[in-house]
Length: 85
Image 1 (tube, rainbow, N blue to C red):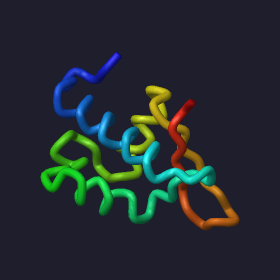
Image 2 (cartoon, rainbow, N blue to C red):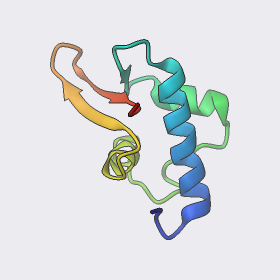
Image 3 (cartoon, rainbow, N blue to C red):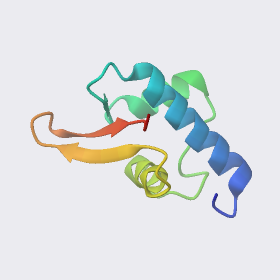
Image 4 (cartoon, one colour):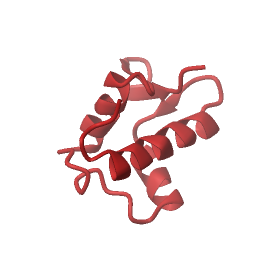
């Protein structure tokens, strides 16, 4: 089930999941640098245009929909995303 603005938001979530799947080498993908990778793949990506106050909020919203696993890892000092199997 998608947010009310489902077209662009759904497309952005799809981009996030596809990127995390491709970048994950078994250790998860750190949030830092991930927005840069999304923009490399889709130059017009902007979480703010989709109604999110930050990239972290965008990632948390994707996690709330169970599209990605999103959690802080102390040893890495960053949030890490994983795509469910």
